[in-house]
Image 1 (spheres, rainbow, N blue to C red):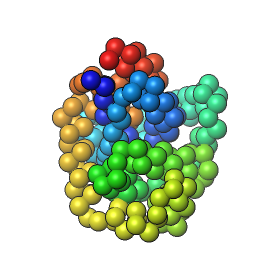
Image 2 (cartoon, one colour):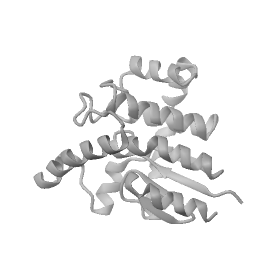
Image 3 (cartoon, rainbow, N blue to C red):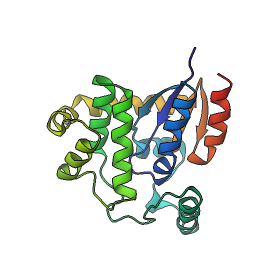
Image 4 (spheres, rainbow, N blue to C red):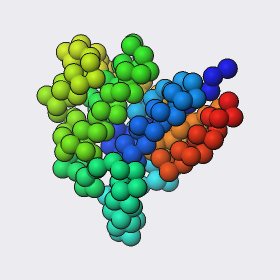
Length: 201
């Protein structure tokens, strides 16, 4: 049986962005299925002891600004450490990702989520802006009008709440988290362990 990865992502997280291409490649290389859940990490932090970035201690905020360039240079991924539109509202982007996951398939949902992250962290674009999101949806080869209409349906917000509760029930507390058979791997810096776990089948 092929391994399966539940992928709990934040559409605002630079760490999710830095791991995006690698988790896709690992899943493909190991014939693993990959399902994305763009959950509400604000709600997760409130129940798991985490803090949103502005409420973290100054030392933690300063260290983050040191660590991001280190990973940017190590991975060769050109990101803006303090992008113009961070944090961007996830209301519409998450709705579109969930709608694609549930109606079209996992791969288009992942492609859109990763395109949203690239726009925010590499291109200084605001993915929460409908005009920008229209471009991003076109970039992955989908019909923007259809996807935006579908993503705006109110039921996806309820699904996101339900997905967030499932993440909490599984013990997820940070982004990105990759869950394989109940085992959590938190952070793009744990992807070597994800690869090792996938190789076990």
